[in-house]
Image (tube, one colour):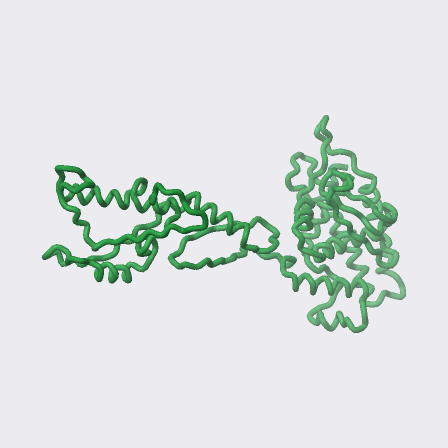
Length: 372
């Protein structure tokens, strides 16, 4: 059987019959003549169980099934009953022993056949779109069944479709409020026009990377002017061709405030828009962008005109919003919350992003403020 070609789509099955005793005797064909009982038994044992040349090893190497299953992973107690009932003779008198099963562990867990099965399972079992790399681990069991256990070690809020939909609905309500939305009632523990997903530290880090992309010239105004854009396209590389990956983001002004104040809000909403792998990859690359250096002297390149326009808007917006907060008659509570949020963005978040050290960018001038 071991020398025969394997049949296509057939699983070889070998029945191993034994009387439960290893007693081939002296001068056996396994050990040659002359030989003792011990030598004959040892030679026979090696012929069956040797980890590199034994019959069991060769059978498993061609993917053969072996019966009884005790020659693999099985219940030893059940097989010992099988061995005892099948013994033709008792064990040697006075030994006090009874025939029992011997569990032979699998010896080729990494064989070519196993790898083919594992590759097939990877390609066949659909685990769905995942934001990160999927690690597969295969473990043999005694059961004649296939069990798939999926363990997620990290789960972001944007990976949960229902949560993303709820936050997207809330963002739409903030944009175009309706009387029936009752946003204050729904946020009874404290209502504000705050942020959906991020903390202040996270917003500083995100804005820093967006400003780096802007300084590199990787953000383009699709509609509007540099100081008053209504839609922008963000890239994570210098590639600006028609096939370059980019994130198109609409910017909406609040009253007379610049649309640039909506940059982080719009970025948050774009994250909620979907969980496609190419979209997630774009966000990941954006959060790793670094200032571009000149190839001749290694210094940072000159800032793009759009970046300079953004810094100019910062100065103008801060004065405008402070004036609105001090206006007479005063703004109503909802208006004050919105204006205060915009004021804090320009007064706190933007300066913090400009002065935050750029992770991964070596040199003494490793903040945006220090580069210009």
